[in-house]
Length: 265
Image 1 (cartoon, rainbow, N blue to C red):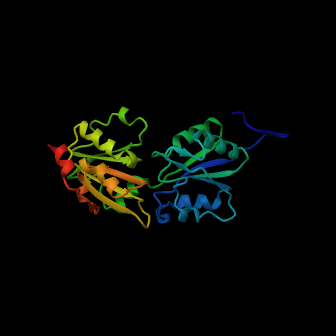
Image 2: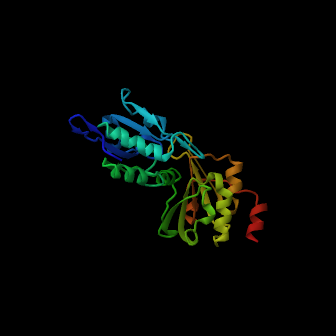
Image 3: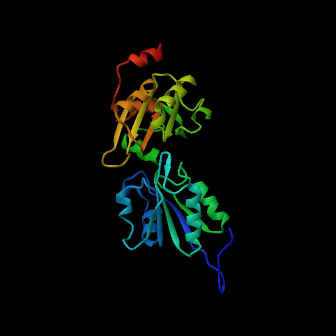
């Protein structure tokens, strides 16, 4: 992209801060993130950013929502990239406010690359990821000396799910954390069981982590899809698969074992 110019020469670029808002509770934001909101000329925010966090933005600061929902985008990602570059070349200090952490399934890498390519100064303000916030709410240790020495984060949205190689990511002594997996919970369970994970492996779903209506429920891998449907689980939610689930405060939602017994046989 060609750098804008004025009558006196090239226009000075502003800067963009990719800021992690954390999982929802404003108290979980970093001091640096709060300070960035206070000094920004413009805030470009995701749709899932908690309203309590948006309330921290000064009333006089312009804001633009680029909300994304499953299969529906207010502004496609290339448009968001172009918007950030355009506003930065107006000389503004922009906060690009993202739920969780910008570099954990937040497309922060794509935005940082686009900004750097356009010659715009970009910096990252990390945030508590959805997985870490959810695990804390459920008192669910993602690693544990007696239960898990490895943890893996994966995206579970439908696109490309069957092509992803998850073999070895879940099982004894390992924890698998799945983002964006509510809509494909049954397919995820079938995939993991086909890859050799025990149908009796504990699984938890933590919904709306760090928010007042947070909920954490658990069952067995074989029952994951049924539990999500029966309990009416909605996004945002995190799925955790592993023995560490049994050490959590998640509420037991074991389903009558009709289906599970078939898969366990």
